[in-house]
Image (cartoon, rainbow, N blue to C red; front, side, top):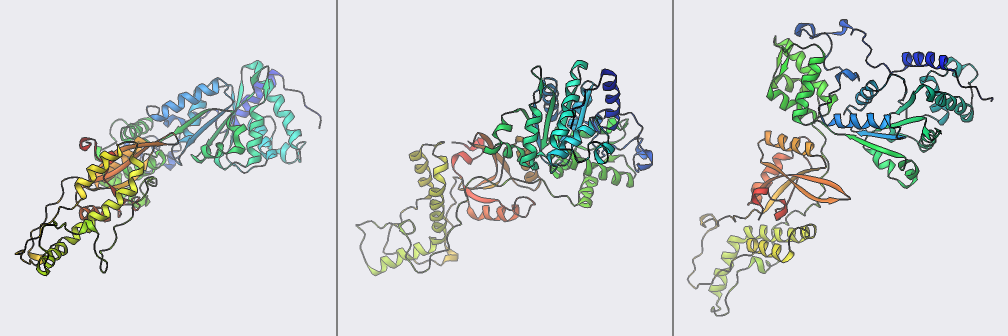
Length: 523
């Protein structure tokens, strides 16, 4: 196929207008009035449009949050023609809205293409770029001169178009969604496109948009060529409580709120808990909560309105990551046929007279206290299993000495006249004052997600706190714990109750070593 000449400046200007009109990203702030026919409760509250629509309108982008830093980083990266940028975040964190806000803040002379399908062929990708940039029409692709064109045939007009933008100080950006699902062939094509240059200047800016799995994909050996060209990486994290409050207020203001509509502090707390700080879920809950408030004849959404909204939407709580500490084995069942180990048996001084009565008396005492020392023996086994992880935090001799002080049974002196006491009449032994176990609920890398879990558990009536674990593969880890407990029975009762909460079914009992105690209880 013969190469076509690049368009002249007049053609470029016309193409820019045509591309902007057809492109979903350019002119994202089109002042077209909203469709009032789709409004329900909004007119009752004096709102001119939907405050919590799920559409990716950059006017509703809330920059006074952690997302604002990503906004500035991406905008600077595009201006500097960094080559390949990567934006990662969980589903619903606002990646598309952020991208539209970034392009809205840039100069108008930007050609933007959006590729929503990660399973295209290499030829289909080039056709999408040519159409979105306004170089060719859809009819030319389907029925015209480019029908059945090869990858090489499609590459020539694309390169000529990109090179023709330089004299006008214009440039092109392509955003590829669901990038974590891209095929190997398409990733190779993206690498080639990112290398297009003229006079040592990049001709095409590529932005990969995907879920956190994109980072894992780029880290594979087969992707090292592409990974080395990714000069900027941003990650969107869920909003924390104060950011959720500001986010809700901002969206209401953009929609025309005059102060009449608001959410109570308790409602904000509940929205944060139920949404996990995910903006899309915040929108769903708040929209339904305002509808419930309108039905109640009030413009103030309270926690009951929010709870009813979450129930209507049947939303699960935020997903918690699996705990990373190794689980400890459950205590063994009480021994029946085999004799108890030394820890279970009282020490009889050598000087004590040996007689059938003395042996029987000592055996009765051991039997009465057997249940308590079974727990102590199980805890000592658990300590041996968990000690390896914590030797870097505590000196092993000191750590073992401290645990032995708690767990070693006191000696029982044999007396010939020791009476036999029924178990129900025996005086209870004082519980040890040193914490024995804690409940590990979940582990996170994000401080915001950690605080959210603590708040969830606190609302359920538990005493929750967090500690920072030793880094693993360079990543920060925060674990959420309940306790500490001096009695295993109390810990097991709370464990059963905590596991009934959504998202905490993997909670478990672990040993209360010093590094897992609350800060005010550290030795």
